[in-house]
Amino acid sequence: MADFEKPEDLFGNPEDFLKDAGKKLQKFKGIIPLAVAGVVIIAALFSSFYSVGPDEVGVIRRFGKYVRSTNPGLHLKVPFVEKVNKVKVKYIFKEEFGFRTTRPGIVSQYSAREYFDESLMLTGDLNVLVVEWIVQFKVKNPVKLLFNIRNPRRTIRNISEAVMRQVVGDNTVNEVLTRRRVEINREVQDKLQEILDSYDSGVQIVTVKLQDVNPPDEVKPSFNEVNEAKQEKEKVINQSWEKYNKIIPKARGEAEKTIRESEGYALNRINMAKGDAAKFIATWEAYKNAKDVTRKRLYLEALNEILPKAGKKFIVDSKEKSILPLLHLGEKGGN
Image 1 (tube, rainbow, N blue to C red):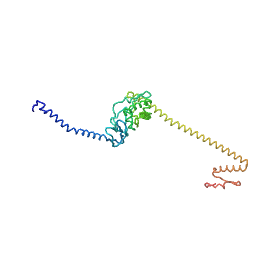
Image 2 (tube, rainbow, N blue to C red):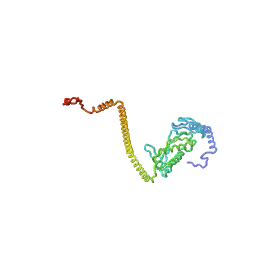
Image 3 (cartoon, rainbow, N blue to C red):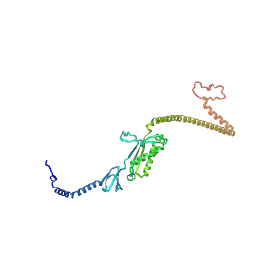
Image 4 (cartoon, rainbow, N blue to C red):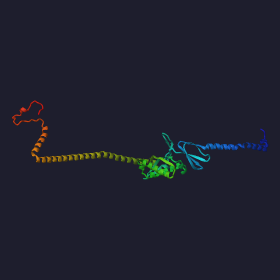
């Protein structure tokens, strides 16, 4: 390799080198603006078109001010001036409190971490519970969502936690665990929706549901013993009421039946006595007016009742001296 002792040996004459560079720049001077313009045009074309998904609404802002909303499909906007925000309005969002789902599916997997900072709560009777719940919501007004609240997810989480603590604090431990779970869900949902509406947030709460409510691990054994004693008490009470409901109504029914039979018998005897008395009085009145006729009628009525019960009847002539000719011995039946 040759040794260069001077710069001219490597680059040649510096003046000649600068002249050549100036000529080359003059050649590209007219191309650079065209290249920049081409890049700007291509960028403008790409930024002019946008698509909105089937479950979304496009919110167009021009210099930060709301201009219009667009439905699903391909649309055009002013490049570099208008900006689009795509908001899912048909998707149901879910926030979890006290637990986290790491892998949803048929058999979901949950985080092993304990979120006591949001799940540990005090009930109205000064008991401590670990409350886990979910909040499902959707966007009903995307414009209000973008312009009226800064961080929708964090806002909903903070309000949900505050409302749940308030409602749990208004109920006893047994009510939160068993008896008023549905009412608590509804109460929290209504209060949460009321607060969000006051913020004009554009968010609709779909459901609030308690997932799991348990006492802390430190007091679970004692708590279970108390619950078992209460359940045993309820069991004995229910068994007693079962026997009561079987015996008492039956005894009352039999007593009512006896009373009704006695009343019916008494009424029947009274009516029969009244009827006999009325019949006797009527007969007596008829006897006073026609003694012979009445006496004969009574005699015939008495015979009419007696003769059918007498069996065989023999009519004997008063002049007959013996009744043997009238006895047809050996014959069956006959009058």
